[in-house]
Length: 399
Image 1 (cartoon, helix red, strand yellow):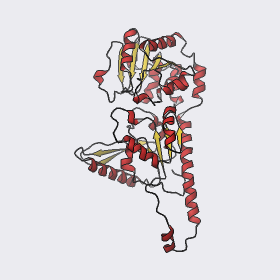
Image 2 (cartoon, one colour):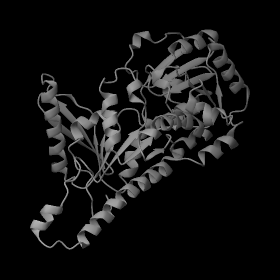
Image 3 (cartoon, rainbow, N blue to C red):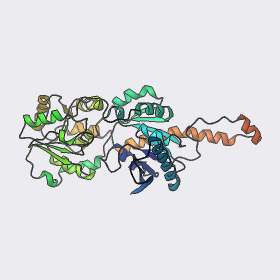
Image 4 (cartoon, one colour):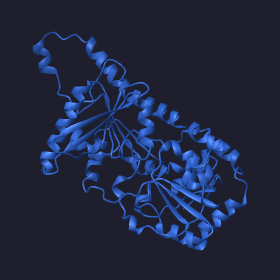
């Protein structure tokens, strides 16, 4: 598996890491990150263990766009050759990677559309055009939620909805209690927590208003601040910014909180999101309150396992109602939802979809191998050129 991703492997552990780690159980995974500045064109290759290798391209900042693109493509080619990747599935988390990968000849092409990246702050102007090209080339398209599926399903003949899931075994220990993280011990209850990327999707006005309305509540914000000026974040005695924390530490934080919150803004960047934190909170036994993001309203709001509120007053009322009931009041409903999803099940279903698009190519090659070709001259006169960048047929299952 050769994956091109807009997120760093060592950033917040989320959908790409969950999926690639599982694909690595049965095949080698090469994970290309976006370039960083370097003294010379160089591919930094980092073995992450368990069949995952991360590649960080380094490019001199003085290169022109054309020069940087050519150097980047050369690094991709050199890395694939160096590591012996000749038979692989090509996986895109970002359409922009097509600039450096459109010449490759993979077994199949997967586009995992986990977010509507064109709506995010700082999105490249060419992103929508690259996505059109990628949709033309991809064999199968996965979407990160129902809203994205509705937006993309008419643009490709094989679009499949795979909402972000949860690694239940990682979070279930939070239900029975874990030692409190050191930075939580001095904070009074109730603690209302958020874990995730703090960026333009966050309704910072809502956070500050909730803090002002309930100065006795302590709002904990765990995660990196990205694409927004940290100076614009509300500062209150009862708002605590804990910074980025390791994925393995999150269950202990969730166990120490009274309510998990998702104070997302209503804007273009949140129109299609399907927050991974919803299921992670719930798997931890953490009661949850969110703004009315579409993919949270249905199914979690409708099922009664997440309370909703958009104005400061509504959000506060939803938290108050949550605090007033036992922590496990919705446990049966939550567990019924969790029983229907897992990252293992999502990965397995994706792998089946990939196998399905590869199988006809295998059959095609087998048929061609059985055909009698009278002579080289006849073969040359009757052969048709393969479409540019078409996935090549193969003889064995891709690993």
